[in-house]
Amino acid sequence: MRVVITGGAGFIGSHLCEALLARGDEVICVDNLASGRVANVRHLVESPRFLLDVHDIRNPLEISGRIDAVANLASLASPPGYSRRPVFTLTTGSVGTKNALDLAAAHDARFVQASTSEVYGDPAVHPQREDYWGNVNPTGPRSMYDEAKRYAEALVAAYAREGTNAGIARIFNTYGPRMRLDDGRVVTNFIAQALRGEPLTVYGDGSQTRSLCFVSDLVRGLIALIDTPVTGPVNLGNPHEMTVLQIAELTRDIVGSTSEIEYRPLPQDDPTRRRPDIRRARAELGWAPTVAVADGLRATIDWNRSHGVVEAHSGQEARCAS
Ligand code: NAD
Ligand code: UDP
Image (tube, rainbow, N blue to C red; front, side, top):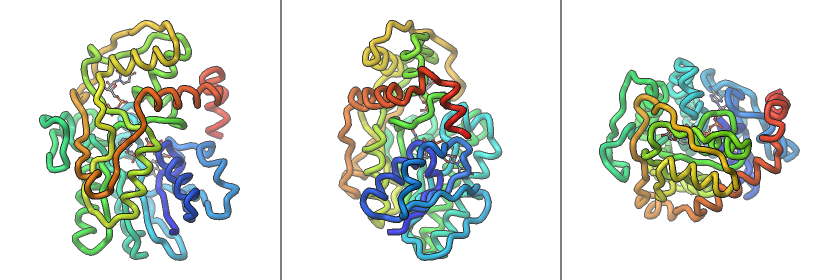
């Protein structure tokens, strides 16, 4: 297949590029490097089947030749990251998603949208099933992301009604190697803090829950959705639910750190509980996660150690970004 991956130089996108190349596909990675890094795909550039196109999907995508699938992952994804750039986030999710859909429609290609568990907001139903419509504050501090993703889902559903072969993946918290240590999300914050011997910053009392999926599991699910003409939406995530405090303690144990836990104020509208119901993914994609959270965290910690990101943090980040 010849696959276009928007956001392909980001954390999940780079693993998706890698997995598709490994099975023999040709990959065109479109990314404006807003939060992605050339370093994430530098090892792929040598492949004659890989192309990095530095482009902002808020502008129309013009790619010549056959295209079999478009996976739209371009979007800021960390709460501190998207709240710093609200209009950019909304425009990427709306105009950008339409541009990616137009590319797929023009080429009669399969389209897969990276949506999110955030479409459920602070969910009143637990665990979250795809037929739950959610509880989202439309003007709150997370609205630029949540509503962009909800609008994008509506757009994908509309294109699907008009004949595009399109599917929606609702991705739950995913972590792993190449996730930026400085983007403010929980797993990377705790890993960085534990490795540096700094206090682990738990927001609120740490009783809020998340369900963490390792990136290799997630990427298998995305590829199954690329390959299967299912519209969904389909939840992709690991149903193993933990409190944020448990995530902090487990990370600290695996690192072998003596860092304290430091409690900080809970951000407004922070979802209280989150766990995917993955029966639809099992039934329609034959997919389920297999990596236990302790194994995934160990792999992520080892990767950060071996890349010296923590020990030489600012210099390394500067080199990667240039
Ligand atoms: P990431 O920030 O590492 O990757 C996003 C990529 O999109 C970056 O490379 C960035 O440069 C690119 N991008 C952003 N705006 C763009 C634009 N206008 N034009 C071109 N490229 C643009 O984040 P990630 O965690 O890899 O997330 C990838 C996708 O998965 C996102 O759509 C995100 O919303 C979704 N998602 C991720 C998670 C998670 O836990 N990681 C959970 C739910 C959904
Ligand atoms: N969180 C935390 N400490 C941090 C970063 C995040 O306690 O240093 C909490 C955050 O308040 C939320 C959970 O961890 O309850 C997951 O946050 P993240 O930003 O990773 O993603 P979210 O699921 O909220 O989009």
